[in-house]
Structure formats: C-alpha cells, structure tokens
Image (cartoon, rainbow, N blue to C red; front, side):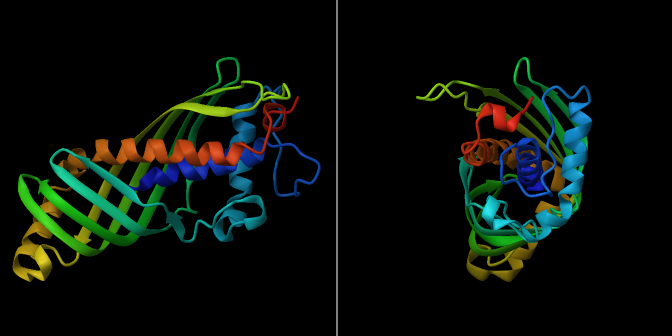
Length: 247
C-alpha cells in the first residue's frame, strides 16, 4: 500500500532535479530542455541515470536516501478505522522503473506511472476500529512485504510570478492512485498482546489482502496525496520555472 508513496516521491525527486538548470549543478544532474521534442524520454533517461545517487542520497541537494526511504507519519480516519503509522522505513524503493511519463507544458499537466517490483516496509502503528468487519485494536510494530506495486500520479501546476516578477513553479491539484499485486502484513501486539486473537486477525487480513487494501486505500491515497504535494512544493520552491524548464 506504500508502493508509491514511494512511487511519487521517487519520480518527483528525479524529475525536478533532472530539469533544473543553475550555475553550480553537479554533473550527475542531467538537464532536459523544455524545447526538447523528446522531453518525456529525456526525463526518463535522467531518472535512470540518477539511480545510483538516490541509493545513498545527496544531502546538499535535499535528496534523501532511498535505502531505506524514511517516510513521514501517516495519520488518518475513515471507513470505520482510525490508524496512525510512524517510524516508517521502506526498503527496495531504489529498484524503481518509470513505465510511462507524459509532460504537457502548455497545460502544466503531468502524468507518470511507476513500478516498484518489491518493497519491504516496517514501522510502528496504533489502530482502533473495524477492519473486514472485525474489531481491531492495538499498537506496536508492523511489517509488510509488497510485490508488483504500481503508482499512477497525475498533478497540475501553476507558474505565478513572485514579488519580483519571477515565475515560480507550484504544484496545485494532486492525485495518486496505488495498486499492489500481492502482499503480506503482520501487526504485532494486537489486542494488547493476545496472541490467539492477534494471529486470527492477521490471518484474516492476509487471507483477504485485496479486500483489506480496498478498505484502507482511499484513506492512504488521500493522506499521501496531501503529503507528497507538500513535499513536491518543498523541492521546487528554490527554483524558478525557467530553471526547472530551461529553453
């Protein structure tokens, strides 16, 4: 389910820095001109070129490491359950591939599809509510293995001028949809450590993995969309539109 909280973060990091143009850019940032007739292909190549640097991160350019990828807390309530996930670490995010990119600079509409073949996620949780019509409560550690994670991201942007008249790139509407082919989840310390009931709930969740995802995914997607829109704007804020998309 976290396959691309990931997916979007990986793309946005590589997308932004691959388009940026400034005096002191390092060699590993491959620039793509806005006039490139094959802009989509250029950005795809740039994301592939950056993979080795994304494994360890580049702190001086505000690029976090993808091994592991540390995610912000996820807090949400809906569909009869309130859940908080913290201390989230994701392993395998560096093994991403961009399946599709379409950039329309005339309308400032961006679409990207990303595949993450395998992710291992761990963290802590607090949950209270009903999952698969079963009452579920508890707090503790959790782990997840996910395969075939696809993220479909669509976002729009604006280029309003700042106080000095320089056009700034700003992400506006953001929509993230996530699908996971297969997965396995384990929640520790359900029902205050009652192993018998906890094991039964974990078994029920994994026996109905796709149904479980459908119940919680709208909450996850809404939370992630808001989170990564803010992350994206934090990344692009230092750059003007002309820096992000040079002539």
